[in-house]
Image (cartoon, helix red, strand yellow):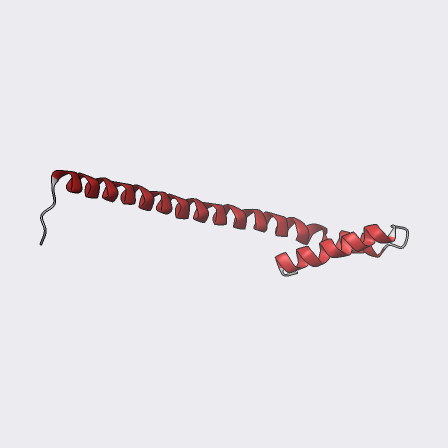
Length: 88
């Protein structure tokens, strides 16, 4: 086995410290992503709870003949989107 000189040893230790810092950055990113997933799930629950309360009214308005067609079309798209998100 070849022996390392002082500079090679210092370089190897420096590289090890850099890799440790990179690993810590990855661990922090995973933790942050998990926190964001939890926050996203909380927002989704709140949106779906609100949607369940107002869905009937929005469907009624989207079928009301005096509402312009383009607005009714947007409401129908919103209904489909939120029904898909919330499983309604």
